[in-house]
Image (cartoon, rainbow, N blue to C red; front, side, top):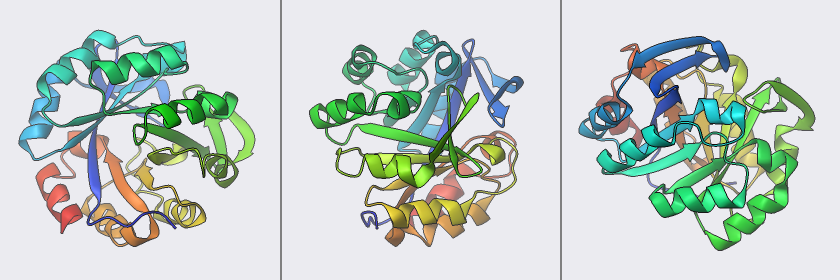
Length: 248
């Protein structure tokens, strides 16, 4: 069972593709909806609504295996007053250290966590509380490389490998729901949180305030936070209200 905290962290998401703010449906780069071309301005909007954390994803980077939207990330870091959690194509020690040095609070490692677990262990040891492992699932199995590939490793099995590595959190995404507004997979998220001692962040499918209420009830089980993107951009979820509910 994960660590107990006072409230749920709401992470508004900024997904970057060619310098623009987008959301994908089920991780498909060909099903991208563009929401704006000024990521830093979007970060300021979220900050004004009370966001203390921001979840930023370099989508092009996730497919390329290296940073592609670095300039956009830097502009966000320059204008967002809170903490930034960054993922997408971070697959070696050099890129981890570079982003942490530039002011990113936490880096999210996905594909490399499955293929190179030692990298995660070493980075977490040297940067306590700043490494997050992304556990992306399709039907309970781990998906990698921008969700293009599905492995034969179960989500709990992968998560368990990092039980003693000192990672800050597990970012759990149900790929089949991501960007589709089908509702967060609370059941699978809670099951994972109960199976390991590492805090779990829920992602994928958040639709409205009901998802926030549902996850808030499982903070004691180890659910640390929730990432929401499309629901905010489509106006189905008010960020200030979501943060208030999550804290309350």
